[in-house]
Image (tube, rainbow, N blue to C red; front, top):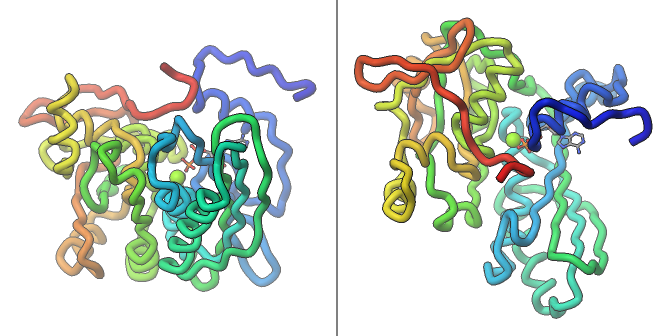
Length: 313
Ligand code: ADP
Ligand code: MG
């Protein structure tokens, strides 16, 4: 890109995005651009949100994974980004780069998977692109949704004193759940409809990395209660094959696609007492003025967020 220097003291995906963001052309039509799960775009009579994602062979799935699940995943991860705005995904465009080794039956499986996800979540498949490619299979999904009578929930609204809440349980998605992504669409819309949410993100990079995105966008800090983090069975199982504890997996593994959000403590209490859905909800800590720390027993210590980041080994 002419006139843009990509030199940055930090390397990795997040630093690269920061550089792109700093130089990005802006428009009054886009009140929220780079830095949230979706961009918010002003539309006649209201606002819409839009997001795009790539799902790549060798990075987001393996060569021998079932292709129908790969198609499902590609659509579902973008639906999850719309859910992270507290909205319901409505329209999908899906572009596919298909390597020559795939048969027509393989391609059919992929698009059956995309369609499965669209039907399950009431999303229209409205277009896309289909090309051959020399590299691995790659799927790009772009999803849009109208805000209608709901406000898009941003990453930037967290306030000191807020409770931090997460849906479901976390960690070990690599053992299988990363292909069977269940975007928390119904939960997100119910939360946004009936509760005061200050900030929200979906857990794609890992709980602590994604919490850190909220902290950076909101210019706040947080304390996580280690004892309260909902550790999944998969995280426990996975920890038997790694040198990490189940808690470490829950804090840093990517692709959980749970919702992580902050709200006033009174609202959190109201939510926990009368949850509007059966999906588990856990208060895992609170927002502070600055810094990230973790409370283990009666000790609180600084905590370095970690998770999955592209371009970092
Ligand atoms: P998510 O995990 O929610 O999909 P990402 O971590 O992929 O979000 O991206 C973070 C933010 O950076 C998003 O707002 C996204 O739109 C933006 N972004 C990522 N890559 C690019 C790019 N190549 N050009 C412009 N914006 C980008
Ligand atoms: Mg996201």
